[in-house]
Length: 118
Length: 262
Image 1 (cartoon, rainbow over the protein chains, first blue to last red):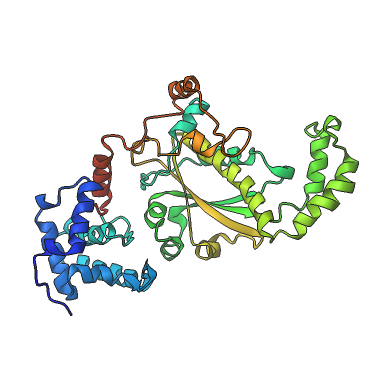
Image 2 (image 1 turned 180 degrees about the vertical axis):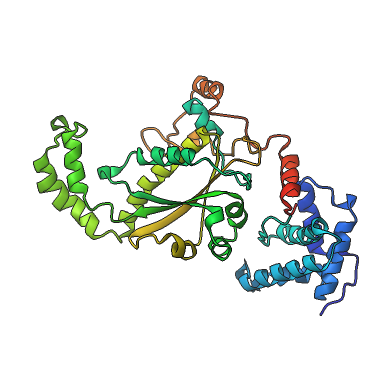
């Protein structure tokens, strides 16, 4: 179990996410502070830092191309669904919470398609 | 719509109006367009099963999704599951003779019933029919099926529909549609009214003509005549390239409408 020992923005995976949001989605990540707060909540729930969450979805072996772990990705999709169901005042807010985490992982190269959330 | 514009407007649509059904007659037009496609030995290699998304049990719908096609499969109200029928070589002998009878294959080109019976069938077609599991045989049959699928797609676009050809988990849907064993699964053609604008962000990037087509021999590019390119632009076959300036805003709006990640 890793503790979060620095600001979330300093983790590589969060930098990748922010860059993707700016360049691919046309969204300024800093404009909405709740995005990072929700990621922080998710990290706390899983007791993992952002980089570890991404790593949990990957199969990395020395000298071999990195692959997405089917098991890891499925498990993470379930954890996101649980996290989504557990918080938020209404269905729209719950969907937003889940989608923020999905966005974080997708911009880090983890394919997730959860379908229509509203 | 003019033919060239239909070609120009076709895009792989990935956001459908999930709530809006497609008129059955429009699907019939698409299937008819596929049926009329060019095909070797007059064999309709393409076979397809039309299924409305809402008639698919939830567990089957979830099981047939692939990681990259999950959302599009869920959004599209009509699914056309396409297959290449490896049994379509059977009967080719009779079909070829019919083409002779109707004046499509003629004496002027060396065709006769006797030629079909004594040469084409025993020496060419029967060995193909008997070796339908060979990759080269499947590839040529799949090529013909692809031509037919393309015609269906273009007919759909002409009818104002959005189309997207994508992958599906064969075993999952087969429990429902019960396709015969000799049908090899190809793609699912998703059909519906686009939820995104018909431009879908602009015409997709493709390599220039000179990079993919050659004249005389490989390495000598087929050079495009700028005047002809202009004519195609005027006919709306060549359109504004992606990304159109508002595409990111459109994707954001669609993501919010459907509750999808940004």
